[in-house]
Image (tube, one colour):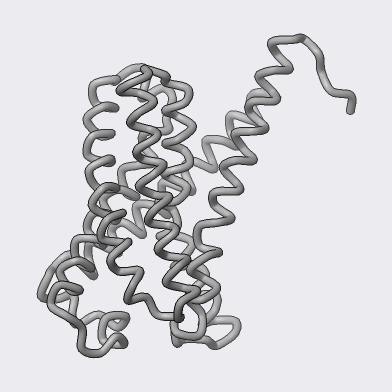
Length: 223
């Protein structure tokens, strides 16, 4: 059972790494240039926007792209134990990128397609993104609590992965329901791109906690 569980975790992390690298590279390739960003389809749909908006979008795309591309690496247990200095260095970079991504995301939320519901959805995502980062940093810097730090970073990366699910749901909306206008789809996608992610990681952590308590007490649930 342990071999099967380990193989399942490796497969899941491998899939996550693949998706994270693809989405990260996609963001950096399409939005990596402040000048070229105005030529992208999503941006052209917005029409004329303030110059600050383009700069903020560029900062958000680059920072979030880097964060999602490197964040998954931090959850490899063997890597954390064998290379703690590298783990911390990547962590500093990740935290800086989330800080930039969260602040710029909050600004961009005010201009989001999909109306007020979408604006609130993306704004809430940005606030929770920053809050979970704050709690993760506080738990390790102030309290030196690695377990709590790990839990908050897991929540944070689940929110970071909204970049993956947003693109997935946008593609599904276009492919299945033929909804290509984000003004029609984002009022839903702005919420489902991150709420299920957060619920899923909470479920995984709750299950892990129950298993840990079972091992400690020696009491196993009946099957």
